[in-house]
Image (cartoon, rainbow over all chains, first blue to last red; front, side, top):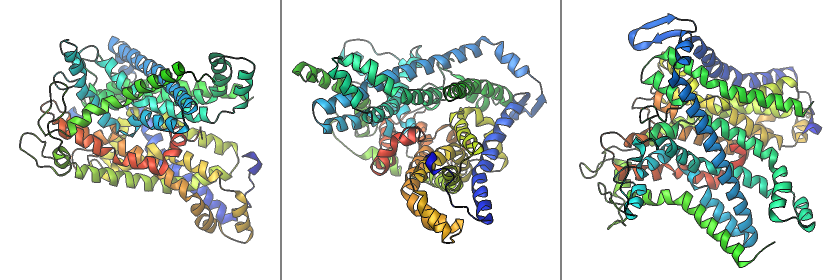
Amino acid sequence: MSSRAASIARPDRSGRYLLGALLALPFIYVAVFYAYPIYKVVALSLRDYQIAYGIDDWVGLDNYATLLSDAETWLTIARTLLYTAICVSVSFGLGLGMALLTVALADAFAERYGRIFRHIVIAPMIFVPAAAGVMWAFAYTEHYGWVNHILLALGLPAYPWLVSDAAFFLVMVTDIWGWTPFIYLILLAALQSLPQEPIEAARVDGANAWQVFRYVTLPLLKPVIVIALTIKTLDTYRAFDYLWIMTKGGPGTSSTTLNLATYKTAFQSLTFGNASALAVITMIFPLAVMILLLVLRRRQTP
Amino acid sequence: MNRSFAYRASLVLMAILAALWTLFPFAWYFLVSLTTPGHIPRRFSFPDVITFQSYVAALLGGGTEGTTANVSILPNLINSFIVAGLTVAGCTVLGFGAAYVFSRGRSTVLSVLFNGLLVIRMTPAVSLAVPIYLMINSYGLADTHLGLSLVHTMLSLPLAIWLLKGFIDGIPTEIEEAALIDGASVPQTLRYIIIPLAAPGIAVSACFVFLASYVEFMFASILSRGTADTLPIAIAGYNSEHQTFYNEMAAASFMSMIPLFAFFYVAGRYMVRGLTMGAVK
């Protein structure tokens, strides 16, 4: 990359202006459709803005004070972090396991079987998330879903899963089902492009399969794992589709995460000021993660 | 390597379990989509007759009264394609030039700007929902294809620029240097050298941007009220509190995956690159 540094033959002046304009184009767009909304959401969070009642008053930090003194807000934050932690860790474990299994299958049988298995594993990815959401909601319905059909076949009574306390965790199952292929594909690509020499060397030296994995493969995979986990964590934190389609945050507020709380406050209660304050609170976590990453990166490359 | 029978058998067993986990949820749903509309078994059973009535009803509307929603998803499909098409056009036109500059230029400012694009990718979309809703409404663009695609373009622009830069990085600079030395202008270099050579990359980036828009749910749900409803909205709409036409919902769900399926043939091997915004190739 750096060997090509600035090796472009000098374009003339009008050419340089054109390149500058081309570079500016997306950033002007981003300023209008991203930076301005960010400014606007912070500004709105300081107002009591209820479009339906024609209320639009400056209230300072009142929205935040109300939210932060409400135990429900803290529960919502806790649910969001719990959802993220469980989905990311289980997806990662399953994804890594299936990626290793793919490599092992290709190795023990034939290349072809590894590829077939890969196609099977990534099947959830080629389903539109909204469709996967209604599919899973259907699976849990009391009379028609296969989950209860299994219970009935085992002689157990049917259970209204999505209107029970289990709902929140059942959405996590869907999330894990739908997004494990994401982690899987990234780890598989990394596994398949690993240099073989260190692994062979460790085997020759008498390391067993676990030792090879733990002391050779895993350290080699580490950079990719960090990337995959970062993207997956922030994506799971942003998760909206499955939760909204399967439970709408219910029953009660038992599966309401920060995203759903913001959405409901904005578009059901139509209290835009409150919703904006929630939206700002929602952005703290990703911001913290990104700052942390920047700090870590700077420390690595002094 | 241990290739004993027990080892191979345990691999196969694990593979079967993994396959059940990913495929089984589809199985029942698929059977329901092939059952006569209005008939959903209350226990495990295979349908007596395999029929495509639900697919026809979902696609064209109609069907036996009371067993189908009598709504066609065709307008929603068309909406989805228009919105996604506009989004692809927006992302490519806005992003290509910048991707080229990012690929060829060297400066701290450029790398800060380039990495800064990540922030957009990582921002919770719901956090932008209120201001964007107010903006799009105030422009009179609520419930229009253009309004939704303007938002989708913003969401996918970083992905497009990152992917395009990755592909332009792979084009040797010698060709365009020779062209510039021979007196070609920047627009000519772009038009006759970079764009043709980057065409496969443009196609791959277009695929990712298209699908990102095609499956997007949250903004589609707040910015449309009927006329511009995209396919995910229509599918989620089947799952109503009053009456759900499960057979048709299943049929529509399976039909909605066709573009994603097609994508695997076109750009499947670039999947990882797209998922990680080019961080892993």
